[in-house]
Amino acid sequence: MSTLAVMRVELRRLGVRPFAWTLAALTVAWLAWNFLIAVGGFLKVQTRLAALPEGPGFTDIVAVPLLAQLAQLAILLAPLLTMSMLAGERRAGTLPLLRAAGLSPRAIVLGKYFAALIWMLLLLIAVAAMPASLAGTTTLDWGKLAAALLGLALALGALTALGLACSAYASHPALAAGAALALTLALWAASLGGSAAQMAGPLAGYLALPGHLETLMRGLVASDDVVYFLLLIALALALAVRRVAADKERG
Amino acid sequence: MSDSAVLLELAAVSRRLAGRNVVADLSLTLAPGEILGLLGVNGAGKSTTQAMIAGALAPSAGTVRVQGRDLAAAPDVARRAIGWLPERAPLWPELTVSEHLDACGHLRGLRGPALAAARARVLERLDLDALSRRLAGVLSLGQRQRLGLACALLHAPPLLVLDEPANGLDPLQADALRTLLRELAAAGTAIVLSTHVLTEVTAVCSRVAILHEGCLRHDAPLAAAGAALRVTLAAPVELTRITALVPVARAESEDARHVRVTLRDGADAAALARALIGAGLPLAGLEPAAPPLERIFFAIATRRTEAAAA
Image 1 (cartoon, rainbow over the protein chains, first blue to last red):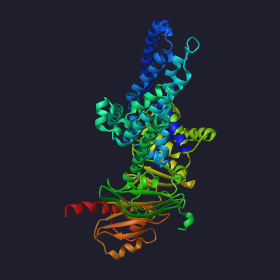
Image 2: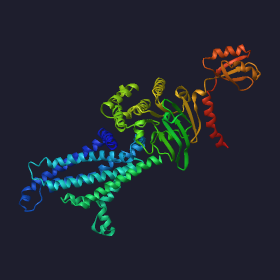
Image 3: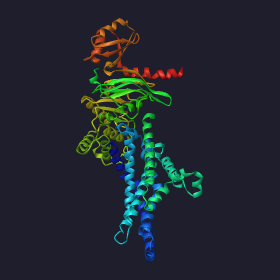
Image 4: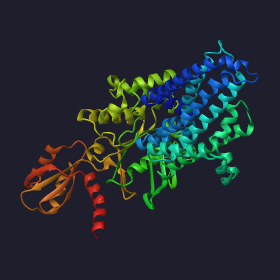
């Protein structure tokens, strides 16, 4: 109930914040432009692809790459969306008000997390609607698309949780955004280059976010990939709850 | 005070910050309808004490009980029983006044018609109707204070914790605030009021607590202090002659030419003057004395300066 109350307040605040709308508008506009370019390219090669026995279709050439672009944009989007959620509240002095309303640190963090996640998922729906709008005129691989959407939703959830955790620990929203960006880039680049991955060992390979996302984007739903994302979300949120709880003790 | 009459109880509450005791071993109680003026110099621990009472800050030691329940063990008590206005009324700048009240209401568990009724009540009571669609971020200091107070009052809590509520209010609004606080107290709301303005305390508080360097140095009903006058005599007189004032006032000699008097119920300055003349005392002047509260406050507050100088 408390989580729901915090989520409602946070969604209301996101809904009236020009910054959140600007981010969403720019993201959708950029991806819509890329979608149109990809559809144009697909139309040019469509007849040649039809001749191939196992050739890639609309889902492989247009839909999944479009969703992959959203995942890349989310590296920037998630930190910007979450940076002021806790760091900004602390600076403005409104975080003690939430504590004084009898809300537990868990309710505060989860409420804010679900609000940001809903905002990100609405973006995902807007982007997914682009290829889905052509379902009547082309053949969509719904299974592959669903796996890609699941992967992207999990990735957005993980990046949002990381952003919120950084916001919980930072004293200023800009620092939170910077830290979340650095952390996300580190996870993104953890296994860049085969030799680097070998040097760092299998742990770096496991920690790298793109490896888990790519599997899902290819249409393969593996439980270890899903668990990876859920673990990342749980760890980031647990750290955020811990920090918010410490605020009450530290003052 | 019986246990059932205690709304708020602080038992040996301490708070350590950066290796020093900001509040040390503080114990006090508050009954419904009481207005406790919390006084102290800057850094005395007033805001920290209020944050602990409001449930925003955990005590390092001791317990804060509201309606008999420990705030640490039952934080939900804070949601329904306490309204808190911190210093400088922190607000969400992107929300309008009305949205702000809705947000505070949701956080306090108010919904639907109950929330709408509560919002209308505080908007009207704090004269915020005309500002209901204005963004909180563009409000003046006084308007922010009123909105912060509206948020604290929204769920009609039995305990109000107010930190400098008259900050930024004009004289008319400050007077309206005093009237509001008296009305709330008359209806049974207990109020902890922190302020630097001593006249504000004497105008509305029934009790005064003075904190100094984190410790409670004074806790007494305000009425005990009474209204005091300072009598200046034209010539030195024998101290025994001031006993003639007993029917109208309690008198206390400061020196051979000055007497400090506290009027009894029903007596006024004119009656005192008549008594003085009737007793043959050479009256040369009659003026309001520095209020006892002010004297007590200065006596406590200057200890730090003397200690620091030594």
